Length: 330
Ligand code: PBG
Image (tube, rainbow, N blue to C red; front, side, top):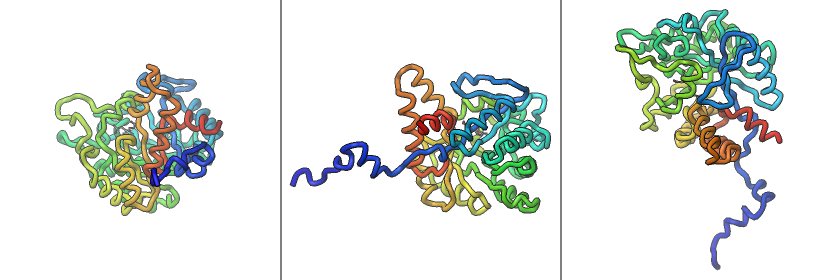
């Protein structure tokens, strides 16, 4: 008999292909990252992220209402902090009337069912653009964790559904979980950026928030003492297992596309949902190549998101969320 196997039988037409399809992408898979800025009726383009804006609260709320209507059920929120409010302690981060806290209240007030996941890390609030407090030229772990706990509690008080620490300090998941329990926020979850790599793919995000590490003497030039070395694999599993033990409800791998091996391994190692961040640089690459007419934007977008899900992602944070949801709903 030749050929012995006829694998093409299951690919004969769209009907059979759809019957045996293993991964189906839906708008429920997405979380949408949003950048928020001061002011009203303000919408600022981010040149390295075509189609993504920094928006004032009023316009953010309008966008969230639209997202809800098309089936996107979670937003990851980030704020652009006025330079005047930045220092080395990050104290603006737990101001109960800060932009982030206002944003959480406004979004939950307008669309109560939308899952709101504010980012917990000091970089937008740091004069040095680092995710932690700097002492003697080093990002110090434990004092930073104390700050992150205050920040997380202020988010919970404002009504956040999930706290999303993206800082990569050690012990912060445990410290945040403990503080949430002690303050009766039993239902506030934690989605930890568990395996977050020191990646060149975050450039456009740092443009959006003006949050890149500053170039100054005594200040670390990069985030490699806390974000992971992309040469490593087992370390990602360890990070994810530790975060689950410390109380994370969801663990995230970040970036996405170049890290799908890590996504699969983490997925196999833990028994909590795994999230993947399809980061700003990945978005920018697709937009740029599509703008040049070198790739078919929509095809590549859907393929990449589906492949992230196939690799093991239960949730995907992606700047494509709105466009992809609109396309999938057609
Ligand atoms: C910072 C943070 C970053 C991103 C999310 N939170 C950037 C960084 O670590 O420098 C990147 C997201 C993206 O590139 O889309 N805590």
